[in-house]
Image (tube, rainbow, N blue to C red):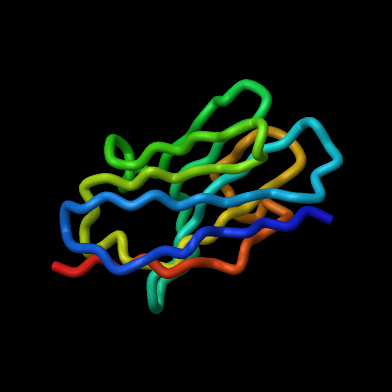
Length: 123
């Protein structure tokens, strides 16, 4: 059973940067991908970024391209999300997710989810 533990988010101001991390444990398969999704109040869960572990291939949602960067630490089985130039519309609960297979942009493809962490960007 894969467990995903996310770092704490926080309250930042417009234009600030913040890095989230997600540590995976209990993984027994080698074909593996992790991603980030977010959910703002009253909205659906939106794709942010994802990464295929074996080759590092990444995908980004249109609203975060050029501002957010997803990366991994193989030794620690940890995924990171570096968020720069944050905007109030980035305010959401951010969820880490994992799946057996390649990275995709569809939340339905992910089997494992973290507990979520709140990121609030003030204007």
